Length: 584
Image: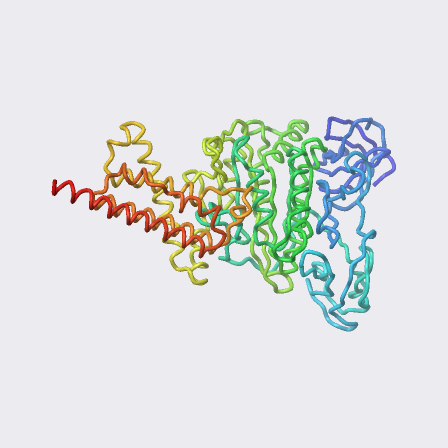
């Protein structure tokens, strides 16, 4: 850094600085008298290009600039749980930080936590060794770890008691380890190795858990046009999935939607701890009215927070809503910096940037030897619902699951509007093996039958639109009926119903089995000569209403038995009618 460093040019979030000696790529730079935060993105001779993360109105050429000599980093600690932060992980509680340019990051010194040591003076510690634990709300096992790359002998150890963010927990080989630490957001945290195969991330949403499951440590994308329900689906997953820590990144979305989510989280009871779900949630809010380039950093901040808790042996989920707004920030900055545009004006580096983000998902053995995972679920908001645009196309290459939302389903009030024909899961085999080991060897067969019936039903429905349903044989008309029963009795889910808002594995299995059993009985009736029109006119409400009326798997089984009994009565009645007709 030299005193001669001055701002030479300001073009929105792009700021060129002259004379910034010693600056390196990704270093944080303070711009102007107010110390606006920025990051070095290019160095050409004596000119350093800085990506400003705050509103640059009022910043003029000639103002001073200085490099802090460190990359953009996230401040990590127990204060994150239950907190609301901006894209640079600065707290948003109290005064709106993003309206106060140059406001530096705050530490967690304002809060105290109960600390219990787990190492003594003289103990040898390695990379990621647990130095102690901190009592936090939400039932999270928060562990203070030796920072990556630090090993040696404990020279000092803090006794049990209350600590704040700046407290020194231990001194290892002359290095003070504090409760709060910083980590560069663009650098993945280290681990020993990745693990193959895993248990599914149970979301409580049947269309996901039954048809298109994602494993812990997997990556999923939710593309869909405006009004198809992306945000609602992601919020449902964030509220009900069985992860330990939820990191919700509101990336360029509307502020009122995020405000609604925060209000719901504050009221929603956590079934694990009995407290509030917000206590084990970290919200990173960079809404559409906040500085645009901080949006670009927000998803990296979210991934870093998730990796931090993963290193404690926890399962974390990153929900990014939406990556399209993040890509738009990349496109805007690229156009200002003169980078060669590719498809639809996005920078040529978009594909590698998306790959690097989703690559941070994974189930790993941590440096300490524990098992932890980061699952990433990102929304994609293609303009006009065009699923062939670059962000959607590239994203499909790098994710394990795609939950494509269909506009026609949404307009028909079918929620979640996940298209069974346009979605996929590459984790089906791994999840099937897990279910088989967990006592449900029929999971793969059941899932295959559901998918096959839905595909046959769609094909025959298209044919019926051309020829008329009465032109189809009875067996094919019953297949169309079976597809409707699966859609309405299994895949649909009411987020406003206290019973249907969440569906555990046992109840999802019961609902799927019930619908398949009813479909099989209807097919048997058609094969025995019962007219298809008679079967179609039957009241299927016992099995269709089970998803909202039956709160347990046993209650669903009762609905199944009632529906099968009704169909048996229908078959006997038709036989008597035929016999009477024959006698007459």
